[in-house]
Amino acid sequence: MNSVGVKHEIESQIWNQIDAIKRGCVELIKEDELYEKLLYSTAHNLPLKIKAGFDPTAPDIHLGHTVLLNKLRTFQEYGHQVFFIIGDFTAMIGDPTGKSETRKPLSEEDVLKNSKDYRNQAFKILKPEKTTILFNSWWLSNIKLDEFIKISSNYTVRRMLEKDDFEKRLNDNSPISIHEFIYPLLQGFDSLFLKSDIEIGGNDQKFNLIVGRELMKSFNVNPQVIMTMPLLEGLDGKNKMSKSLGNQIGVSDEPNEMFGKIMSISDEMMIKYYELLSSIGNAELNILKKEINEGMNPILAKKKLALEIVRTYHGQSLAEKASKYFEEKFQKRINPDEIKKVELSREYIEKYIEILPQGINLNLISLLAFIGAIESNSEAKRLIKQGAVKIDLESNNNLIEIRLDSNYALMPLNTKEFIIKIGRKKIYKIKL
Image (cartoon, rainbow, N blue to C red; front, top):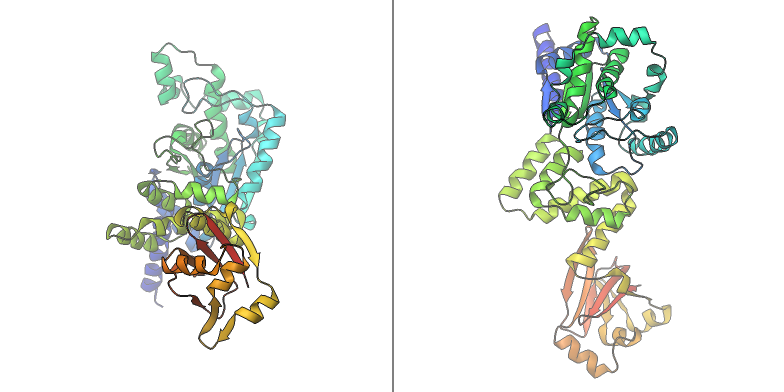
């Protein structure tokens, strides 16, 4: 390949990266700088330093917290190194981000406990070999006073008051503590210390991210590119996901609960969840949007999303069981807790079940009598004739309901278990 072809190939790779990186992004400062950083990275085969800070302010992590983790994983897929900063030092100061009053600082014990939870959950998404976990107390606790004064001299009170929250509180004559000015400076110093290439954060963190970018300029360090991500709405579809509002989907939720919560989000929110939480590529996502607009049942897409998210935190087996549980309890209106389980004896199978080349032939009258679902054969015949007896078979992880009108049912040869429903209340899971 000639030099023109090589250049074209590199540019194509870079724009593919940018398209994937920008997905779901609220603001990128600046795209031309991102292009130059990626160009240098590609040409010299050097991974970029991607920084994201996490204040361990709560032990319970929900999907809203994982928006940044998923974006960090995208960077890792393209070979870059993630610096996962646990803000143990800054968490003990308190940050007023998005609040009308200062967030209460945490104790050292709280910070250490919550940090452990963050790390455990982070590696369910991030690649360990491309993740460096750091505590910002490792350098912030060693800053000398004269050094910090030099750092703070690069930022003015006027610039600090440009922060929306500070400006509002000043106009309302609400107090602003001096230590609240210190917080963004310390977060900015994290970027200066690490010489990060890119920092990502929630769009409520934009001001703090810019402080880091400008501090780097002041000390003649190549400034970081800033990427802000949206705050994920919770189950109500309106407010930011929050445990205090009760609209959260916790990453430690039980598989069935997590699956059900995801299935309860609105069809409109589903697309945003796909953009921010799913690993499917942009091309596949665009096809999905098109199919939904053309009339595809959104429940099918939502189930696929729920399956992926539950798999991330609980594994494939439990995700499939959660999907089946949802189908039985909600789509088929079956409560799994009310299902009676029956294993057919060898004697029964030899006497009443016939194995044919085309399938397993069940004698329904004898089956209903064996499991104790009827009082007489005539009752069984009447229920079957009325169509009150149904069988659910699983096929490709979906339940197929068969309405029976004959005294016999032909089942696939590979059938190991099935559900039989008699009327509205009697439900049995039959194991062959």
